[in-house]
Length: 261
Image 1 (tube, rainbow, N blue to C red):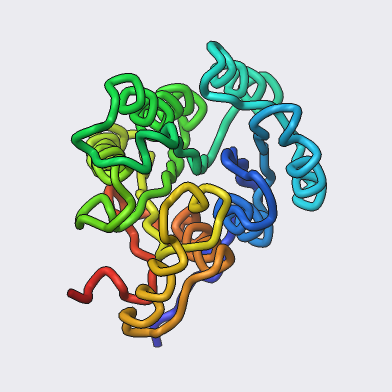
Image 2: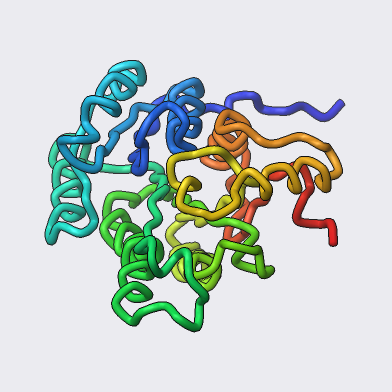
């Protein structure tokens, strides 16, 4: 009889960085809870002092040993996060990049009308920062690790009102594939996680979002919207050794919505 090593599905003794928690509706929060449930020790970031009162209680619930500010618009702040992790932990086993931004006027208009500044800002914060995080994490992952970013189906198909974020997320998914190829020899895996529509703070900037939610629930084969907990459980599994031979993939957690025309 074939046996299954249950010890593979654990994060005991692992340490991970979670970015992008804004409140208890955030995808990053769902992932952080799942990482912690599997035994991981976490470092958590918050955007700024205005956001800290919302994030700090969640970090305490996670028993996070490190809580640090991270505004990607502030020069050197990302490097400071990794400097502290290196100083206090000396290593890192996984990280979650759950950060995206585009100026409202560029996000709500046509792609062909977007400003150069808005496009570059959206790319820098939503895509390039993941590449930069990987670069900073690489020396801390000398025993291998896992890198996660958050994407959406609008990267592959034209989704009404998703606009500028479509090309940005397409670039992010492509970057994840190239990073997987480059870092794979070091045992570092890379995943783009693509949840179905979720009512998050980030989604509030997308026009007619309630219509998008209704369409997703109606058309998805499982006829169910996903929750941040659904995304978290699947992502946490990918961080374990049970998923050690999966990399470079865009992982859809959307009830099957992306397979339907």
